[in-house]
Length: 281
Image (cartoon, rainbow, N blue to C red; front, top):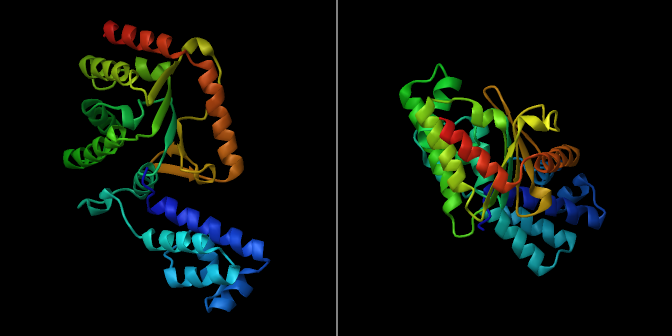
């Protein structure tokens, strides 16, 4: 899978910090050796702002990096400015969605827990439109169409030659909530049944009978990067979302998702419940 700008930038920062610490240098000492300020080097390591590849090259030489390490990091620095397809869209995108699209363009897996609506990657167009009309009551029809078009474009990652694995645990409340009317909801449930047959999509339903569970706080997504240290958690909030990447935060949500998978129905039982719910409509 191709590595995108966010992953490149994060990987570059982590590797520069590791090399500096292995060399036993402070930020101030390392920066002085290559002619950049402590603040600039700190931004390089904390993944903020742009980087200049000649400075990365000089840092690698000071740190005693191997030729392979140096060349790899220089390439990461050069590629960190490459942007994804959504950057060319004429209409603005909320910042939280902008970051989600950037991260999602690079993931190798996504673990979704949904307690309100079907995860965006698994929505039909008509269901997505109904969700946006209900959630974004101040938006015009053109704005709703714009956001739904982006959501449909996001789903193209499922058609990649080597797509990420999508594991969705969906609360039974989601499949019982009538969104957009009976016909739209029936089509959405049938779509979930169809998607569940894919080898890279797993859908489980968390039934009401499971009682209290580990994610009563709400919906979330664990975005799995090419390496564990690049994982990020996304949590829905009103008017946007929160992104978390601290080890304790990641551990908490990953553990919650494991409990949810264990409490949810298995795949055949989940598909049977989805099929039953669609027929009831």
